[in-house]
Amino acid sequence: MMDLPILSLAIWVPILAGILVLFTGGDKNASAARWIALAGSLIAFAVTIPLYTQFNFADGGFQFQEGLNWIPAFNIHYHLGADGISVPLILLTSFTTVLVVIAGWEVIEKRVAQYMAAFLIMSGLMIGVFSALDAILYYVFWEAMLIPMFLVIGIWGGPNRVYATIKFFLYTLLGSLLMLVAFIYLYHQTNSFELVDYYALPMTLDVQILIFFAFFAAFAVKIPMWPVHTWLPDAHVEAPTGGSVVLAAIALKLGGYSFLRFAMPIAPDASHYLSGFMITLSLIAVVYIALVALVQQDMKKLIAYSSISHMGFVTLGFFIFNSLGLEGAIVQMISHGFISGAMFLSVGVLYDRVHSREIADYGGVVNVMPKFTALAVLFAMANSGLPGTSGFVGEFMVILGAMQENFWYAFLASTTLIFGAAYTLWMVKRVYFGEMTHKHVKALTDINKRELLMLSVLAILVIGFGVYPQPITEMTHATVEQFLGHMSQTKIPTGEISIGF
Image (tube, rainbow, N blue to C red):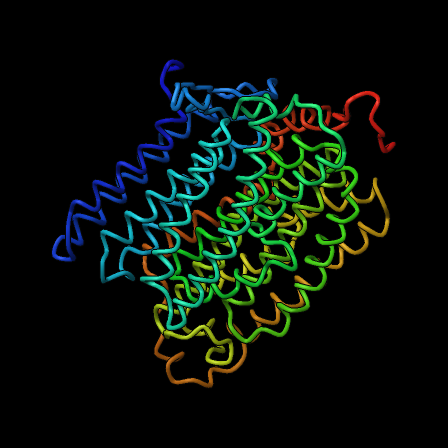
């Protein structure tokens, strides 16, 4: 078993399954496309499980490594590996893909094969981003992932989809170009595209700051951090339900993960030097964006802004440089994947029935959809950080970590528990409770078995990790300690002017 290339299988099984789905052809064979997509996504998920069962929890380095020469002339390798940060994210990706296939089962009626294939291929490419240890391989996966997402929003999206796709594409592409420039500079310094070589490369503080900002341009857009966040609400609103789930559950995590994998360990001194700047941006996202969410009329927009606010916690946890904050940030990434995915699925359930996302078009849903409301309210509570749900664990750990660093950081971060509860519960009150004023609400039917299955699985995970987060923290602990050890060492060459930390 150990000899199997688990990571390559995790990447290529969903991509090949996606290509196979495409071969089913037009909508005449839609049923075949759905079943092949479901089988492909389940096999792709099953392939990733050994990453957890065979993981060495005591080893903080890269495990399951695979390497092949790819372009020898430029010293580019097909080099994969996973550590305690990337394995939970790979598992989240393959699991979410199964849910997305189930979510689009009845809803998508046109171009079914293409829709399912786009998600399967995107899943493989995202796992490629999480496991690439060669800079060019990583860049190829990073850029290739944009294409299926672009198609999903552009073909199956809402009325304003063209604007949303172009905005999404331009924002993410412009950021990525600077990242490529940074890779080319590092290649000239080391004659290698291997990450490990970049980690060991000594650089002056000025160079580190420039490299950090080149990475920042790509990753901050992806997370998205304030002020480059404006593409996300537009993309979410126009994307079909499956697109929103993948965007929220996985695509935002690519930015967070890449900070830990590239920007921070390659430029540790710059990361410390600019930590105040990063913490400020994170706290603006946590507080200001939560207030923006409070005034939204569109449910999807509200959840999109809520995602930006919650991801502010992640970047805050990264830049306070202690293990509580960092582990909390990783737990928050995984937890946010479940919660925001579940919330978008809940909105999707309502949208499929009423074809409106406006809060004003609902009210009293609990009277006709009691099962669904119970689950939707649970996810809303988790989103506002209720103890006993996974939403609380990550936020609480980051606030504790921030407290060790600075009281005011922790104070501002903890305001999200108030604002988060404010916008989430206000939406719940207006959508699910109160009087039934609309005829179309009275005609609603409760969730079917398919919808119940996908929401119940997420509900179990949200409560499970809320009560017992150890499977995540145990996996990340050794990697986090190793990462912080690396971050505490300066890379400024001796004799250069160093800024004391």
